[in-house]
Image (cartoon, rainbow, N blue to C red):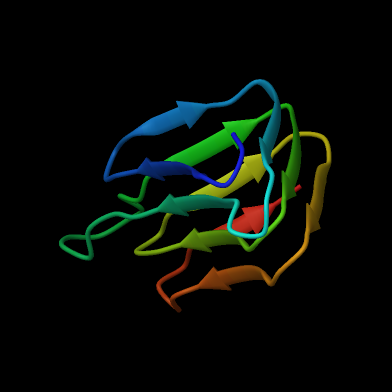
Length: 100
């Protein structure tokens, strides 16, 4: 993608399996966003999952990896991120995590 956005959103009880992935969004406004979200209702983890064997991300702009409401971003191998802008890794305090 040139000058666009690559976005993956995994909702409650959902899984996105990227396998071995290389995500590239070139140009100063090119961005990559991976977000998991879930529900705070009930007990236990109900968040979404984004999983990969290896993950390479290149963006001319910003990269965001975020987990919300027990969501998980789990890469079995390595995460390699190169961004022309800001790289943000965040968790909303509800028990989610980013792991590689």
